[in-house]
Image 1 (spheres, helix red, strand yellow):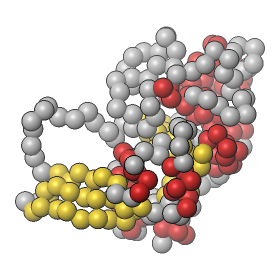
Image 2: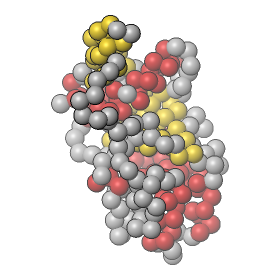
Image 3: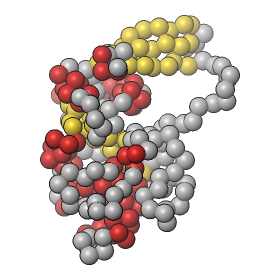
Image 4: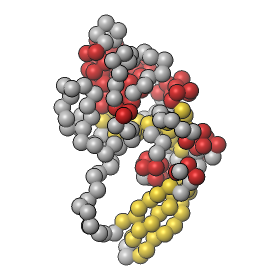
Length: 233
């Protein structure tokens, strides 16, 4: 079934966390018949993880270890929710093509601190956006221009807040709205208000599914996934 499902999730981040948690959850939901869809991963950092994923047709394995219902669990589970992986530096047009897909419904992200740093000369219409805020804004602009429905944005970064400008409230905020405000404030001549204001209409920014770890030394039941594919070096 997974290979016949449409690509519904655009994921910024190719690291272990999203692949061993969010992508595994999507795989399990698909296996249960929920038909969540498939994931397209975008790699923005250096390295060839996207190429390695592509060569494996997006498939990898996850080691599940822990205690469940009083029983020790130590097993390997395949994950097949990823349909393809793209390198932002060389395949950005394909990312925008997905943004214009009527099947796309969700954006997942787990970006490094450096990924949130914007650049003074960065523009919303750059051929290849450098920062994650600019990449997300470009995706929303492409989707809005295509007249498609808004997206659900799920930031999975383990941090207190998102600071796209010094004026943004330090608590978790709606990514899309602050992206629009940030680029309009910094590039008032290049980005007309009419081109930014509608982008966040209807967009849902959901508080992260990732929670900070508990106090040191706490114990309890739980399964702790970890990718075991060769990509995890």
